[in-house]
Length: 240
Ligand code: ADP
Ligand code: MG
Image 1: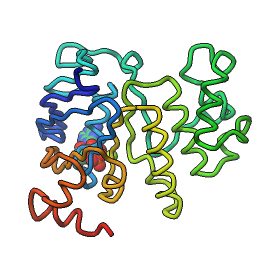
Image 2: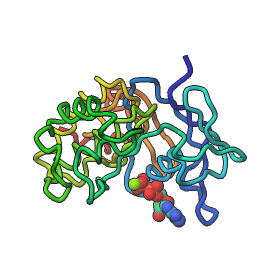
Image 3: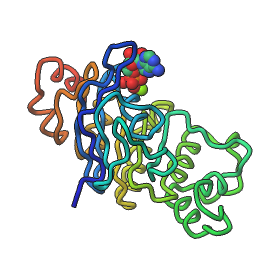
Image 4: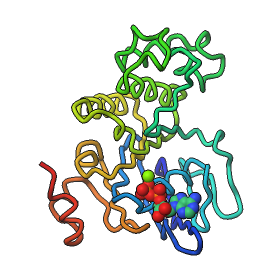
C-alpha cells in the first residue's frame, strides 16, 4: 500500500530564500504525524502547499500514490479530499452548529443527519446542535471545528496549531479527546505544533523541523532518547 501522504523534496522560496528547504516525509494511513519546530521554521508554509493554497518551487506531493501537485501539475484544493483545521476555528458565524458540521457534505444536514449526529455525540456537543458559534466557548468551537473537518472523511487532515488558542487548563483534555476521535475515525493527520509536549503526546511520528529543513524524524520515544544534536535535546528537555 502506498503511503497516505508522500512529500518529496519540497522547496518553497520567498524572495530567493528557501523557507521550506528540500523537505521529504511520509504519513501512513491512520497515523498522526507532528511537524514540530520553532516559530518561523516553515511549518505552516509546508501545510499550505499540501492543502493547495500555496505552491512549491520544486518537489512533488502524492496522496495514496496519486500525484496531487508538482511543478507543472496541480489538483485544485477542493478536489484533494484534504481536511483543514486552523487555530482560529473559522466556523461560519451565520450557521448553527449542525449546518457548520454538514457544510462540506453533499445535501447538507438533511441528507447527513446520522453522520452529523454521530460526530456531535463524539465531541460531546449534541446539546448544542442548534446553537450558533458566538454562543459557544473556545473549547466548544474547537470541538465543532473538529467535527466539521472530519465530516467528509478526508483522506488526510491537516491541523495547524489547533490547540494554541485554548485555555491551558483545557488543552490536555481536548488533545486526548481529539486523538481518541482521530484514531477511531482512522484519519491520517499531519499536525503542526511548536510545542514538544504536544507532539510527544499525540504523534506516532515526529518530524522535527528547523530553518526549513527536517533535521530528525521518528517515533517520539526515539527523538526524546536520542536527539540528533544539542539543540534538539534542549527542545525536548523542558518536557515534564
Ligand atoms: P511557521 O509556521 O513554522 O511559524 P511559516 O511557514 O509561517 O513558519 O513561515 C516561515 C518563514 O517564511 C517565515 O520567516 C515567514 O516570515 C516567511 N513567510 C511565510 N509566508 C510568507 C510570504 N507569503 N511571503 C514572504 N515570506 C513569508
Ligand atoms: Mg505557523
